[in-house]
Image (tube, rainbow over all chains, first blue to last red):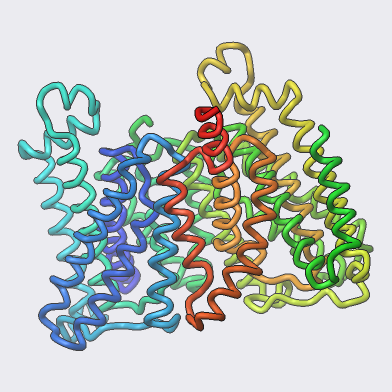
Length: 277
Length: 309
């Protein structure tokens, strides 16, 4: 029981980092970045690669991947932002391109990385690796920092752009700069999630699509565009996954994801805290 | 309506002109063209981005092959199994469409993107019935005899092309386009937009199921490449280059792109002995096309020609 509780929080915390960025991009820019999962996986691989050469550099290099990919996705979606079909095609094809490149470099075996912190702790009679507990703490800290940032002056600017970008432009907000910031910030969140994920679980290139499914399920449950909704939904999904894996086995987790999504769609199509499109 | 007949005539001439091995590949290309043209009905005509089209291809293929080989206890003949795969694709199309098409734009695209992944999980979870990652063969005696394969693909693609053209030129097709161009306006004119979107999705999915089932009898095996994301990307590529909302564009570029992928790109890669997957090139082409000319190469060329004349 306690192990499901912690396991769910680990999964929930990591997916919350992925999904909140995914949702932030949609909330502010009104585009869906199908490449978000690819950023997550590419950062995880970068961390593995660099950790073998110089361990302390693995985190900065993973985050650097996030920054660069964020800028790249900003650039390639800029000319087609108004065209839904084109945005989906461009980001999805880029994600698959990244996946193929990772596949040809690293192969399709699952890889994992030496964890940052070693050792186990004893919580209520069940043993956990320190890394799992640490990842929950970090995820929560980052998510709280994100909430706090949204209350600052700059956060208000982001909110203004997401409500109405034309009016935001009229009052002198540099909308493009906000877009770049949001894209890079979201990608960094995905990179951070990838960095922690690879120290607890193993990654393979196909994870980029799986990460997307989880992000989808979370944002549909939490409501597209609502960061707070997706954080809440991440933990709900985390516990659903943890329970599914413990009770039924891991291969059922995607089924349960789809079931959750369909139920959400039937009961409340806009999610818990959805924004109108 | 003259174009399908010309297509049929050219196809018949090629039957006598080309060697058998090319005919076999060309037949595949023709069936693939039906997939991109039917995808266009939902995306290009009705304006709903459907990323789950290949799920119905896989559904049709697996239903037909499981029924015809009797892996679930009883077996049916070829015609019945194809009929069943169309029926089941249509039913799932209606059911899924009724739930998911209440969503608009990106929300719908998101939900359809999950379909192929769930289908893949189903195939892997019940791998004793569906053959898992390896797939299975339906056996030579159940397939279409080799000399009839190409004529079968030609007639199938001719029939589907004609059907799609009839649909898009009918009143129903007009309503699809009205929904794509302005959903609120269409609704205020008394069009039940949800119903028409479901109709469009169901027609498209049934065609995908039909083509999926036919592919199995054409190539005798059923495997995950029939519903994979690679196939979906190829469908998108053919439709986007051909021009969304034209039927002809996705159909004929479907044939061209498929042949290019199978015959040319693979050949080039072998000559320069690069051990890269040929998909990498397709993805790169797709990204460039979508950024440079989202309206499609065919439409772009036409507008350039128009301007210069």
